[in-house]
Image: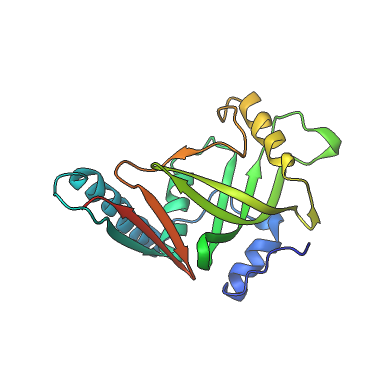
Length: 197
């Protein structure tokens, strides 16, 4: 398996991906990132407030760009400064496929196999939704530049739980979507949320 390829990022972003020694502790919340995150937050608030207030059989659709989604993720990570996840960047593809990079900091955890506590994970997979819940079904996972088995993520989840920075769980767990959202779909660089009108 080859590592997922990130074609659309600028040279500066690509350097930030690969030069992990110079990564900031948290994503940079520039004014444009804050503005994009705010658009998502306002839309989620609107969906929650309006969910089920109008009669209709067809679900409404709210769409965000890949950059808006990544800004929202950066905002959420910055709001939890004690978390293990320090950076998450997603590339949205057609057919509910995603590729991404996560930077984790498990400082203080006892990790097997001589693993360093600060690590980059690269992944590819498919987003699945059912009954207002979501999960990522991983196809491939890389630690830095080497392929690792998917169960490696369960080990990371357990290490984070041992630090008190995460609930114990599994990569097979389903996570509740924000209130009112019943389904999500991805296409190239777009995320669509489906919710009652």
